[in-house]
Image 1 (spheres, rainbow, N blue to C red):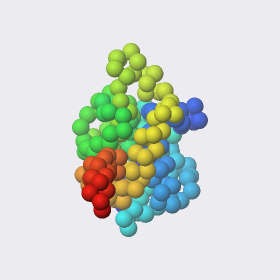
Image 2 (cartoon, helix red, strand yellow; image 1 turned 90 degrees about the vertical axis):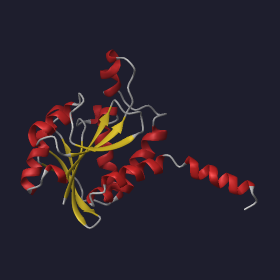
Image 3 (tube, one colour; image 1 turned 45 degrees about the vertical axis):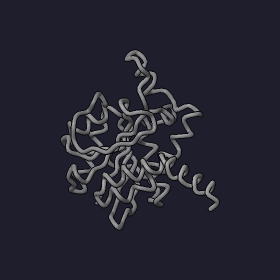
Image 4 (tube, rainbow, N blue to C red; image 1 turned 135 degrees about the horizontal axis):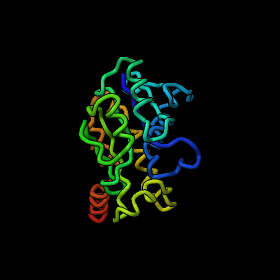
Length: 204
């Protein structure tokens, strides 16, 4: 069994914030894999489904970002899971916008949601770091994180969410590196296109 946690803040006010990209990833997985309708549970919103033949729970804490660990800890204890069974999707300032990276354990790097989860269950959970880019100066960080994605951002946000949803079964199989690689290839197919154009010019 796997618990997939998307981080964000509840409410329409925050729905398109860069800080809510974890919620967006969770929603994309629920849609793509036909999970159950949402219901309130574990101080959050829960949907249930199956990924790669494994039972999967998607949880969006509704405690606000800084208290995300309360919901995650409650769900983990209920299902008798370990941190290795938990994958958290969240925004990462220090990654270029549109980049997706996997890691297990480590520090919070200033992310209050990750800090809260580590405080409740320890740091050794799996993490999908979703790059939102850095505004360049510290003074602009808060406005950037809590600002909405622009219309232009949709050009990379939507394909990225689709790619993560498509690859989600690999997380249930414990193939984190393969998941990250598949997402990367889905978002960076240029070399294949160039090859195809060369073949076309050769008269194929």
